[in-house]
Length: 524
Image 1 (cartoon, rainbow, N blue to C red):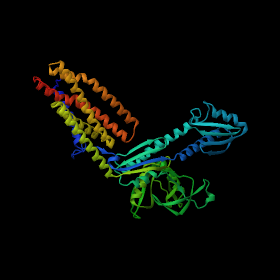
Image 2 (cartoon, rainbow, N blue to C red):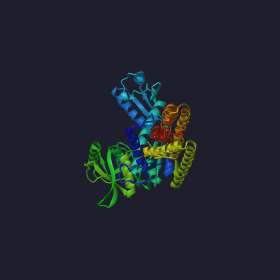
Image 3 (tube, one colour):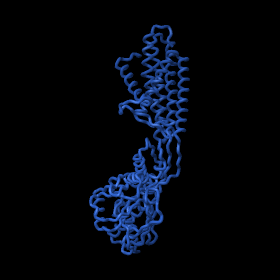
Image 4 (cartoon, helix red, strand yellow):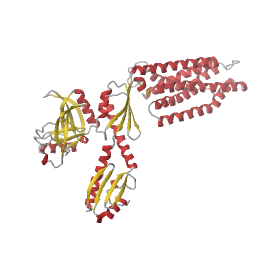
């Protein structure tokens, strides 16, 4: 029946007022931090930067093959097979065996239950394919293996990018995977795009290597590296020869932060190491007193201090003519970790806040026009019941905005379109109900029964229409990205608030009016 219990009436009012309070927090400032939430504006409304990054997986593939090559050498050495002339060519490992061992090596690589290192038992799972020509073997990463490797490096790169962006303090960034080798980054409200581009373009591969004076005495081999005095600017004229032996890598780093050296009054970056790194660092500096230790970032020397005494405490500092900003960025890069492979920016767009404000104004204007037209039509068509539908519509908008505020959702221009669509759908449900009530009034003289039957019989039609739209919203949310997700979120929440406002708020007001005026000759 149309009867609402006192508990039900109070529950509906409390819920509506509670959610509406959050909606009001977007327009008024409240002292309570917990309840003072706001809807975030997306890139198209607030302005900011759009970056499309592409990952270069070549180093990852090479590193993977190198590690497999070492495993192969170790395994066959333990089995006392003679393998020689190892090389890496594109996506393949090539090696030779003695002619007498060809069948045995082939059997080991080909069998599912071979004794080879379990991690390398991947041929039957199609990560590697192998071919054999006399005594020359070739192991090649299959397409399946390449996809697995690229997905793994892309997932790791996304996590590192997220850490770097979060530490910069960008508001509500969007970081998404695009295909097998691209990352989409949207940064609303970003006021320094060049800085974030520099940070995302750095691989941040940190190593500690000794500078050598006598090349002939260095058994690990040497390489010539250039100096870099701060992030983003290199000195091409100054070079040093360093040992290829890596004393320590950034994997052993626990924390890094910028600070001032009180003795030299220079900005430096202090770092601390984990237990394994502290042990390695202490051992290397103990045996390397008097030598210069090169601190290498992405293949360039950023600092090369002389080791004057063993560093045993597991902490140290990096100096290099840093400004406070460059020291802060370096510390951020070191804390967030190294990217698995280099990233390059292949597409960049900037949206100014003026364009965003124009979009907001246009969206609000469209919403107002649509709202006013709907309100006038409902009052003209259904009189007092049209007014009730309009009250429910206003409540629906407050509920929708309130729920978006609770979740601190990001509102985009398509999201505003979803709100406008919700206005039309909310009124559509009331139109179906009122038209059904008109049909029931023709056959039923008791207005209470006629109105209750109208609400009951129209329920299935309204639920079917809204559920199918809700399913479409779910599909758009899980299959789409960016603006499409924004549209699906507001549309989905709008459907739920529409059903609540129709069957609780509008029906409550309708019940009050019908019960009070049940003896009138004509109500609708």
